[in-house]
Image 1 (cartoon, helix red, strand yellow):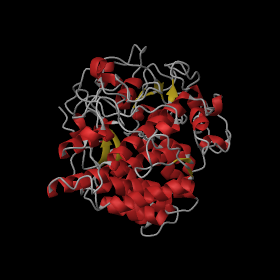
Image 2 (spheres, one colour; image 1 turned 90 degrees about the vertical axis):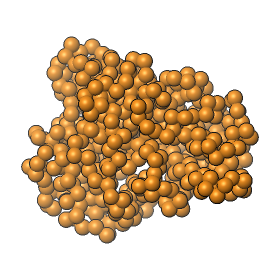
Image 3 (cartoon, one colour; image 1 turned 180 degrees about the vertical axis):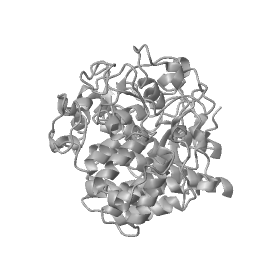
Image 4 (tube, helix red, strand yellow; image 1 turned 180 degrees about the horizontal axis):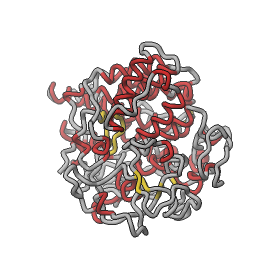
Length: 524
């Protein structure tokens, strides 16, 4: 069994958020209340576990039963976030456009009533609400009655809750830009949050992360699946890489600074790329900086990585065998559009696609035989055995939120974009470490003349596809909505077309606009 600290979750600690803004930050009020939960130091850790688990499960019972939210479709945070980051790009060709309600995401044609736009929004704010409630009960005055060692532990928990809240606010800012803002300092109940601009949210996240960086545990003292100092440093690097999009001001030097801080923690690359995405990937802590842990025995979910792995196995193919991926059946939810596999030169072993019986071109987007299936993610152990019975329990593969490989790529891009504190030679060295792993030798190595922004964008796709960064990358490069880069079915036509630039952001859901007069969408 995978050892993760948040397998022990207090049943009943949940927020019943609805579409009303006033309910985004209310007290837990199911079977227990904060009044009788925050009485022991052990309970603080159990509630902290709920904050982490909120990214991968949808309810208090197996597979999302006894749901946390009554207002959405029952999907967890990660399933929502994966769709929002990947479905509109060349990395995904969705099959069940109508049944899964992903037509709007797939064609870049969503509106304020899109169910995924709404569900993701409420999932993010549910996690923020959990963090706020934890922090209301974890101040110095509230924990003064515990022993000194217990207080020290809770202060670490408090920093982790602030990190998780910052991560969720980062997701909200990245997806929606100008959003409601609420913290533990605001009253609960009927409070109507103000609208913060993307730049204001950026400042909040930056301040939070720089404040708690040294309050989090060092990497070598941090329990698996908890946020260490390096997790905060990596999120800061990603924040700074995209700063010009979020705040209007470039921060590439700061990106380089924080990439260096991450690298100083002693990380190194996993020699086998595929092992980063199998059911034993919890063992890859030398490269994986922070992950959302998934354990079929303790965190059963039909979303998270179950969705990614089962969704990438055909439900109709006579050639593809689900057992090869450690699953009992395939869902056939998505393949990739042809532009992604075409990015991989011969010899690059990261291009892991099932091709037999499949055409590379997605001539019909909702036909499972059109487009390759991605084989990057599996539910197999290092020994090649299924880690769990996915038909009953889902998978046991963790989702790497941050990896050292991404840090190398961020460093290189920030150097190319004019950041100081790093050189092109260093950047090439880091990129070649990735490519030597990908090729198994030096045949794919590049020189400084090959290191261009276009190369980095393509290399990010080769290294990080299906890791929830592609939409953000394309927007940073100005290629998500316009005609400068087309992929099949972009804009709803086979050969692709540019779309309105309003689709660089998602709209605040209609239900939220009606509840909070402070909110509005500029272009929707």
